[in-house]
Image (tube, rainbow, N blue to C red; front, side, top):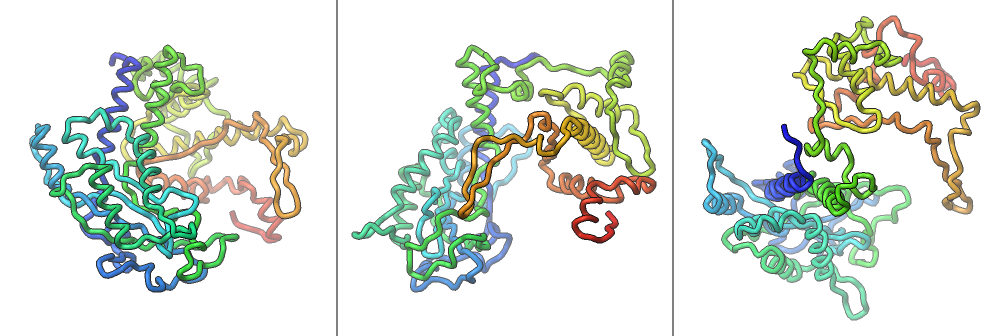
Length: 445
């Protein structure tokens, strides 16, 4: 495959961004957004839940309302998109359900958040009208546009009384916000909209140090920060795509100089196909012999049940991960379920733990591994110094991520399990001595 130019890579990211913008989270019923819990849905037709004294909230909890500002009929929008752009697929899928236009988050008093933007806008609600106007190029900078729109809309929503106190939202303010959102910000046709507003109750435990439960009808005691669990409106990838696009644009502006911290990394360029791909032809015995050379075999391995060694290509993959990924790079290892990919990871973890142990031998005293940064923080009446970790102990970290939560869960539970260790390796128990010392009991781990 021919490597892409930097401009072609930028175009790939733009096209990907447009696809993500036009991929909404859908729902059919309000309770679908809260795991089917109808009790967490507050309809706004007969009054707002925070009015007339509000709802009782346990003192150990905080209550937020995520106001769903209407929705879009997916059938109407996608019918219009298919009519405009056509559908060349053999089997056209029928699209149903709704997509949220936007969310406004308030506390138990109906007040907007003090330290955060209370508005979350939908990429699909902005993108669909642009796509119907044949203005897909306007969606490339969605992340930047979204941020500016949210700040502006949040400012419009905030109203104060004659004494300068912020007012809680009421029915009129919510209706006006809906009209402004759909007409002025999105410009969505009325026939595509479903003017069905409701709120989702979100309860969260108070953290240590948080003020006690706010008093009823006291907006001044409203929450400063929003909930950690929010309604998912937009694709997880949009912010990452925006960052990648910025890095590529910076690289283009710097005449493709990748040495700057603000330019695209080697890994990003390799992922997008800008750099030449280095192929390892495992059918070439010479290549395989070099990969499996004793000098490339890690100094440690995982002692699994039966102490079975890795098979030939498993060992080759582990060796390559150690030699090809020292500073940067991407290495793909493909295989169906049950073919030993988790086993590979265990050997890589073992190798990193062993290398870190070797690095620790450089320090006669553990205190030498921590360097005074010259900074300190206050805690009560005292101050604590902040220390940096010695550079020689960095670079042994490993992050395991997957689009399949079950896969990550399997790895997380398998690695520390006794069943993952050979039966005749009972003397190898990580940190067992510390557990015995501090618990003052013999532990079987």
